[in-house]
Image 1 (tube, one colour):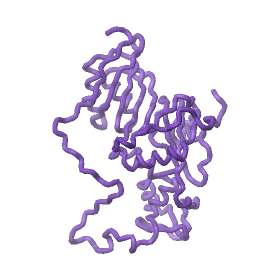
Image 2 (cartoon, rainbow, N blue to C red):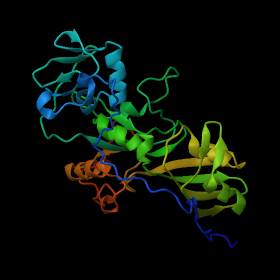
Image 3 (spheres, rainbow, N blue to C red):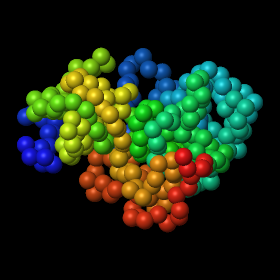
Image 4 (cartoon, rainbow, N blue to C red):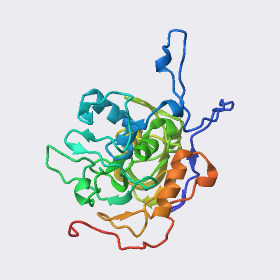
Length: 319
């Protein structure tokens, strides 16, 4: 192969007769019912209920995912009007809700969640606390205004690129939950000898210690000497899965950068260590897409502006 020439992209082969998934309304809830199911356990009509379920309210307020909120309710950490809350309790804005020592403030009806894009440099962790005292990405973010910043996906200490933060637990859950299979795209620099057989194996499937993994798409992007650049795409977010896939073929990842998550791309003008807020219009588009991520007509890449409307911010001096 001539220097600089691109290989034909490898794609994950699809079964010849893959069964079609039935269309499922994102708002539908499946309930198994048998003769032993008590009447009070069955879904109720809107006329029979009061307010919203408490775990949903807490997730929308940015305290975490609905599942995480259910765990905190079970642990007795949530109170409503001074009483310990239970799973399935419903609340209204008239109720006083507390998570630990924090009071839950209801967002005005129709208010959009906040979404930030951050260009993570290498050498930072995606955690609020680290026993080793390493720099954390959360130290760079602005105050969340009576909410909590939730990271959509993680990047390990030595990985750079796009991180998305939001105050919406529902949005974070939809983008990260495995059943939605949201695409993650990376630029990868690999050290070692690549062969067509090794690259094809990465797209047909490799057995890792936590199950089979594969790239949905892999394309060589050039390079010099033993270092080659690739563009890869996955639909899962297992820990260090990109590095482990290449390591399974005797290849070492020397540089890894996330450039896209779903329809959100890393803006080329956003420098490392800087963040910028999505506009209201882009947040609305992201919410619409997250409700139906498979619909082609909603695949409009964000942010929609080619240049920032406001100067990207850095909350600490440049390194």
